[in-house]
Image 1 (cartoon, helix red, strand yellow):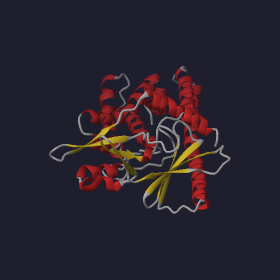
Image 2 (cartoon, helix red, strand yellow; image 1 turned 135 degrees about the vertical axis):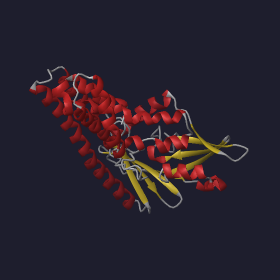
Image 3 (spheres, rainbow, N blue to C red; image 1 turned 90 degrees about the vertical axis):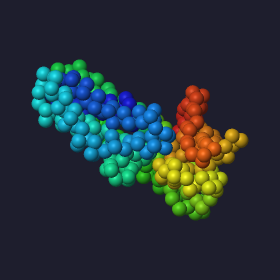
Image 4 (cartoon, rainbow, N blue to C red; image 1 turned 180 degrees about the vertical axis):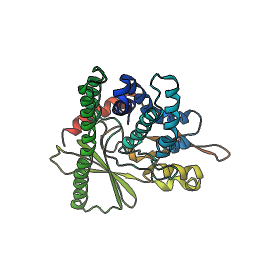
Length: 332
């Protein structure tokens, strides 16, 4: 999830664990702990694109990280804070560390929660930024913040925030199931043979959902809103995996394919080949759009070394996407 959401979650967890003892400091340290797992993003500055993608939401988002590093941070804080309970501080960091990847596991990217196992847990039930999850949570956290640390209302507000956010997270599974059924029925009604289907919410909401559908030579992308009155329309994107040629055997290309779980297409342009990760959709909802959210130029040196360079995005893409989402969310 986005940084603000993880800060709010960490602060609420910190308050639940230690708020009665240390007041707002529990929120502060919980918020800090809630951001620490995302420091793995710094890997993009010191390594290549593929390795950085492999590292993201890996070790720092694991149960192992929570168990091993919580006592270290707990000990450090207990050394200089007036409240010296090492065990209590360790529990605060443990729960803040652990709830971070559990929440992230509900997104499309998922988390390597059981590191060092390579399996990545991804429920794909919520977008990385969802105001309906974050804003009520934030509101009740702020209300709790302005209460005295031993005030009953303080704990009540924090509990209400946690309950509302958790309930919404559970609701996303119900909504995902409903959308999945609609996509399945549409594929059946349109006599489309497919081998695999995955669904995920469109950005910033859980009313509009998208589906990636794998067929023999193509991937289909469709959208469904709970306000739709017309049949679901699927747009076809050729896999074009053959365009990779001998590059398909390259070790880095194989790693990139593993990162994207095989959901990718290849686009050929005048200046070379581009790798499109389909899991995160497009930055436009217009039919046959080629504006993929995550697209990488495949570069090859004279010595045969392969690298992936992410294409730049601009503000106009974001503005267009917001406009498209609002119109499509209201129904087809």
